[in-house]
Length: 613
Image (tube, rainbow, N blue to C red; front, side, top):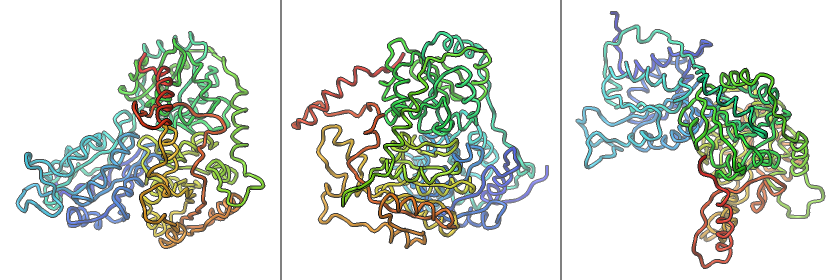
């Protein structure tokens, strides 16, 4: 057997560069790195030597580097991924939030945090977290519950089993998610005689599991019996690249489609079977269909509480639930009749079993009526009084009117996810939302990841002032790398979304908007100056018309553009129709009249909650 002597770090880098997609591209397209004493001498040396065989990019924060990598994987429908490496200690634990985000969203990312010395000779080293009762624990054990696969590389030969396992997880449609290879810093530098065959190019095929024929027959029978079925389209439709199959299925069998955050834009909003967003942040047209459904058919969805209205949306007493999902855990939720299989393959098999059956018990005009409401709600207001602050809906309308079929609207947390899900009329593939973890700070890094994955698309990043303050530094990275996208920064001077939730639960405004915080002086933050200081083109829009003009101008730039606009914090997106109850527990006892009234309303709403079949 021919061998080659390499350090463990050199062997990892060589292996990663040889793992290919079916199209012949690297599955791991590159490595985001911030070096420290836990990885600079080992992985740093190996990555520098690799050069363009496995490119290295420097970010500003470990968490946001990982957000970029995750958005890249999501925009590539999980067919490609990136790696992220950090030093030990705070560099490593900065990655934990991103690992949780990838875990919830079932997205592949390879995390390679440095770890303490395997030989323990210099213990405790700088930044080492010591467990008084367990000598095997380090800070990296935090990754265990938020990784699909976790391994600690404490001997060079561990790579021979750990790396293939890592790729099997990242390319497995059911178990896909973050992989953490905790790499002891002395092990990175140790040499071993690796088999040369270990580094031969390997093509990773993402399988398309077929459903069980008995499950297909059961679901086809349920659909034939149903009078008012509805399809809930989740992110699994997009990951499976089953968009056309879903549209064909819905049209052929006369079943309306409603969308989750992750599933939005699998069908264009203009598709005649797309009735819009479901649930808490759902469209009136979608929620009416959902409330009347006697059969709910989930396709590639986790049935998150926002989608189901905390399981109070589907009101029919005899309604039944079907869940088509590649992951058996999701297929069996809430007593559903499960079909464990790939979304595209399952829809095709069920459609064949249905033959020419068509349900057709829905009102096609209702979606058109809803879209007309959306257009009116998002239109620019005429004759606004002095001091008027635009609503988020008007901001969305401005971006919508300037958008094309190449536009991708993206966001993650705060007011805009609900507003966009409700109001954004996406072309197919024109929506990217991280709402599984709803992580503030994903937005700017995520926008860069999308643009890297789809450079031909026009990426518009919606971000609130609160989320911008949490994580904005990858804006500088995008400037340095000349990755252009447009940031629409809505400044409502605090956490407007949670402030409205607080009031909706009967509480007083407290600690959300700056005016209600315990501060000596309310800040007047100059986001234009801040973004410009990182090299972005930054401007403040005077009004909605100016916002439209600035968005159009941004398309010709080779750097990010940040457009700031002041908005009204007091009005939510669903005030012109749509929306549904959400289970947010209200105090049972309070001195406040508003809280007591909210508790009465809460207890009444709970009567509609249905926890299982």
